[in-house]
Length: 511
Image 1 (cartoon, rainbow, N blue to C red):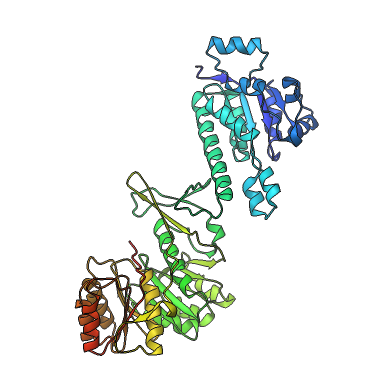
Image 2 (cartoon, one colour; image 1 turned 180 degrees about the horizontal axis):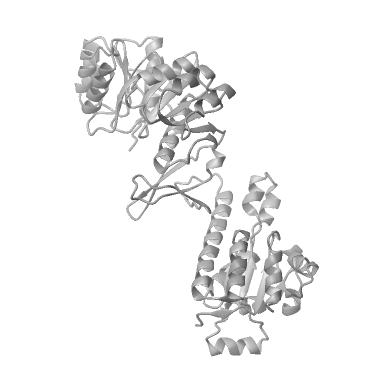
């Protein structure tokens, strides 16, 4: 193995030619022999640079409409031979295989072709075979060969040529090899997910993101963090600083929660640490904001705000009085935007229309957990009245409202609501009784009367203690999944105390 090598020959075959010219001219200046194919060969000739057609090396033409050009032993032998092994070098001479020290290849734009809405035939033709094979071969043999596999590396590689006059170190070659395998793995994953369309990710899961966005830090300042994904597909950021790790988690929680109310009348939510601390539905976005804020004006400090409708000037004037990290809406009125931009660091996001992924993924032990996303929202069709007392129409609506919030709140949770307003919730408690007591104490601390309020639970009641506590707080109706072997105890208590209970049959744990 040779640590430092001098580039004497190169194979160049690329789809995108932009940025290639200065590299070709530098290689020519360094006396590097260049091999090429098709359009790249023509491009190089037009630059006035000598180039040898791969066909002249292989004595075989491009066939099958260009599907087979470089797939030949004389090409891959030139890339994969081990320069420190005599047996390899003897075979190179015997079969007249030219040495190749540098491979510059990019891949057919499969991902862009899919995004363009092209026909299936056009998409399939953009599955690269020769290019991906050349990249893998050159990257595998990084001890002798350097592989440039993306035009995003052209500037850096040109700098390397100029700095070292065509010489590369083992460290250089290994770095470019790692990039090459990153590109090839991403490419294969994109193709897999396209062909795998319709098969649930729980049964076959692959994910890969080419670009990582470095974040200031992670959950805490001593933790490094990156975001893998295309944020711009989901949001247009109109103002403010870059989002942090915690911001992104809260924003994700906010848009998932608000997706439950996307077609409803003006709805506003305030979130803190992934949980709603205020949410209300009203006739105007201003009223919705004011009543959402009233749910917990203390926790709202530094929170995430989200609306399902355009934020107007009146609402913006009120929001501007609150210190908040992020404000999300489908749009902002121009005069509202000017007001909200008054705080330099306040992040303003316009949410675009996009499809939520149907699978959820999280790290676990030495692997990952993948599950279907909880896409079930409790509706009138799901509920069953299990008590003698029937719910009023207003109570039904409030219970379904509370159930939607409960679904997006950390377990164990209890949500209290009335008249389209979140009064309080108990979040992430180890017992459901603790969650209920927390919610009641919180609602009372902000001056809410619980008389006639409803209660939603994310899971069943193993004992009647929660409905007893709810009755003492003057809560009139309860919605819960049911399913406990002691359900009847809770039902009997409600009947004895003229409370209403609805069961949905659907649990909404969120861990």
